[in-house]
Image (cartoon, rainbow, N blue to C red):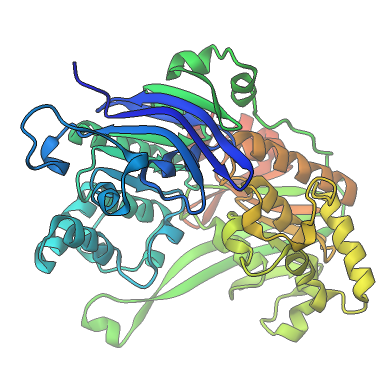
Length: 544
């Protein structure tokens, strides 16, 4: 009888005096797709990282038994049954042979996982040169083939591009190409679709499914998205506070959850708890015939003499009233974030764009009053918050410009009041002001990012995918916080998202964007319940 590819027995992981994984045990067979599900901080990622000792400063005990299904991969002299190794006991030089070659990882955010100084082709080729001993020319040719295999269009041209020149979906495909370079037997996909819109999410899952069948590898999918689990996984394990509380066939567990925690995950759709905005409330922001374009170079010799323009947003018209949420929904590349950047006065635009009747000038001194009125909360707080600044420095930074009249005591008082308003207090987090962003969970970091924006007392918050990087229960908490702040402070939100459930919970008015144009706009009930545009119908039906 063939042994499982991976056998985890009583795995325990701790940092300092805290245990974050408490006696986890499971098997994973070659060719199986297993999902590990749980909210932020449950121990999902550290469990997978412990397999190949990628946890610095962690206490790891238990057994992680690896049985290479292809004996030649690790043991050229083996002639009988493949040898079983305990990965926990292996030395670093032996683990190097396994990392990337037998067990490969696809991480959540490719923009931070990929090196910004090298082209994606160089980064894939490097793996082939180091792990498979290919020459430079052979590795480059194979890298292009791998990029093509993952569905990246024009792979020869894209291979010569840097990560920032690719879209989010293309960057994730490049990460998958790098992970597949050595034909691993186990692919660990850690939240590979979290930051992607619905259509891209489906494409990446279909890609992983097709590659898994083609290469016959096992896949451990780490995710908080239950729809992803339903679509992809054969088996599922539900993890709460470092313990596996429920496991079994994916459809069975998600359709008939038995544990209370699993039931809470399944039923964690955000409720709508917003107050209807007054129809005659003052308009805080409005745009008429808004257009944003970027210069691009023409292909060939003509590019030396004349350039072209890429129009990212065209003919956009909208207004945002006090106490109202305007939701902007669309796929990746539809122009949503470009619209948000224009609203923030961070990029030049044509047409009319006013905040309280005033236009952005592009001059720092003249725009300073508007900067206080319009603040932003980004998608990924781990990237947007400086790792070198503690909580006090992060939250107080904006007050140096926008509240210079406050003395040190006044600033401290406002910081503490704002942190308490978002649910961060010294009682729950001793030494709160001296902590750093990496010491908080994803949801707590997003609360910190919201506090950083709120502390200057703005009237408008631009929310750029504020919950897409969060698990379902944490997303629910952040949305409820935003709803509460809007009710208490009368805030207006320009909400950028690809998630219909977030729009349904938060928005009063909705704009649907496709290829830089607004294809439909109106009240939320009209847009979601009676959509007129075929594109809107697809978005709503896909996430129903």
